[in-house]
Image (cartoon, rainbow, N blue to C red; front, side, top):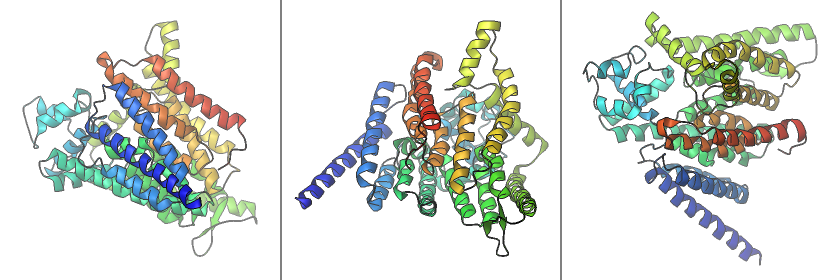
Length: 469
């Protein structure tokens, strides 16, 4: 009977795995993002299958690993179908190989003059779209290095560049698996939790499928947190700087490290230990270490930007990054409420003012969360604080593309909170926008998405106090 039970379970697992493969294949090779009904149905089915696979195989990490990377392999030859950003990635990589600084020129500046300085310039420009092509690049230097590497080995092939970038992202996921498992073991948490990230169809589709480099940034971030946990804080700072140089989002989390270092000091071996003696000395030593940590991060980030540096670069980079706060709007929550109120009372789009207010208010709120949780100093507590800080940022942001959730999801893996897992399911509702004329958002759909997210968040944070890890 026992053998029959095992065979039955593995028959179910094989059926779930094969069905997942078929659905992933359909998603990667037979879907356009305007067909939102098919998109949402496929995604919902994949999410259910993922949940059951982790549930059934949580004690068989090797099988889960094979599934996670096997599903990724299905996308190897697929051209991204939910995002056009990869065309800009290819453009920037080819620009660097031709000796151009990608931060100093917009694609439009070449196309409008009929100057085709890179191979397939017109095709890439048409693919990325006018909005992307009319702005300067704001991808950090390590991200640009990935673009350049894929361009270097792919020659003039767009598919070759896509494959190159996809292999880099998949390689980073192996790193996330390695250090994620080790960190979970150190935190005495179930190791299979890493697969809530790695096997999640949201991660497979958005990062591997659509080539968003949050996957590489997350690998570096998890590595950095593991190094910090085991006391190698200087190396942690180095790797954290590399994470920032891939995507800027970890910069928002820098204030949280104050909590860690104010309660810890280094011994003669450079290992961090909590101490109880001489509180004044302890705090002073912690602050000194914190400043050194920040100094290492800042120095390495600046060094990596140096090859591209010029006053024009600084202006372009800051202005383009600022557009995400003052011009662009997509899948927002609190901002859309504020905008509705603005239209109701003054009949005016408040996005410019909102961005300025947010630039002042957000750092204050982040510091407030950090100070409020200053007595929670374990590694898991620090990650929870980071989860709250980044959630606050996305709750108040004017632009929340689906793939932004990847960073929140990896943070949630190391905590008891599951609202991000729910968010990774419902965030795909935002793709309904691309089926509408002029990409007009359906605010009822956005409202449904965030109603579910906020209910889950409020339930976990305020009412469900004793959530099991």
